Image (tube, rainbow, N blue to C red; front, side, top):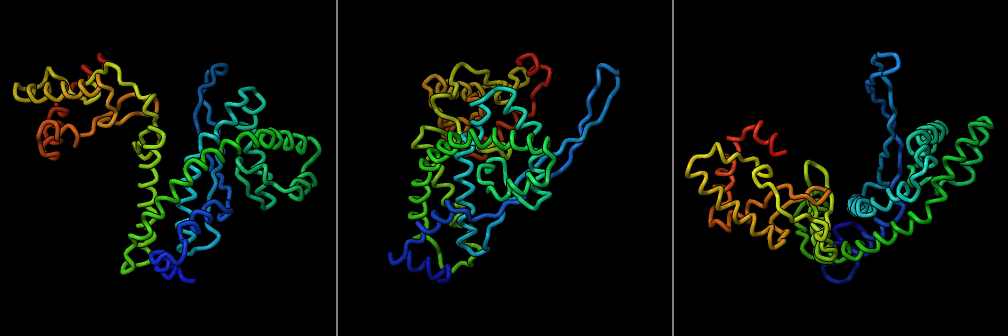
Length: 332
């Protein structure tokens, strides 16, 4: 059945495209290729009092869908959401064992394992080492010397032994977000405009479902999702620090440089900001990953001051243009 036909039938209540897309996202729908790049870094050798350059190899997983249909492309976007939400569970392997054993596996051993596997034509990300079949392990054993095989098996085993705990945590997190993705699909699919191109429909579904899901997630968990300089992270509201803050430094304003009119505007703004901090209202602020206030919601405070948002932003920028770097260095 063609994709557009599925959308039509879903809108008529005759086909469950939402369930199909989520099931596809939860399946093994992608192929992985481990890609290695080399990076140079300079170090100062204290013993020899000389600067030296070392080359580090970094591996990253390149994922491609096993098919290029609209269903697979939307499913891949949903899979990315599942993966991002469970990222902290994937990182827990280092929290569960802080000893040198796993640290060595992470910092020294992964390059070795990746190099061996890819040289034999096998591509597995470290999170999926537990999926390596016995046939591949036997091939590796035959390929390596006895000592190298011992090292490989040790590194591989460190990851596999901890996988059950990690996978349970991953499942718990994915079970948390999956119903929200499904609800969002049920809300978005009836709104699809079938007069649009397939490309436009794919984009509409993917973006709309993502936005709705994260809104539902923030409401469910009492969190805020932030996208700052390309990095997306979630901060729990109970961990947001709403204590007394240096507003001048946060906004980048030096009162000593302002005119009287600018000072009147700025002090009104500071008073409003402090009121929101005192009552622990997190809504009009953005936070960094540690829970510290990073910036203000300009639309919110423009409304409070009964100003047009554009005019508010312009006035604030004029204040920030008068900042003094030495002044803020003292504040820090």
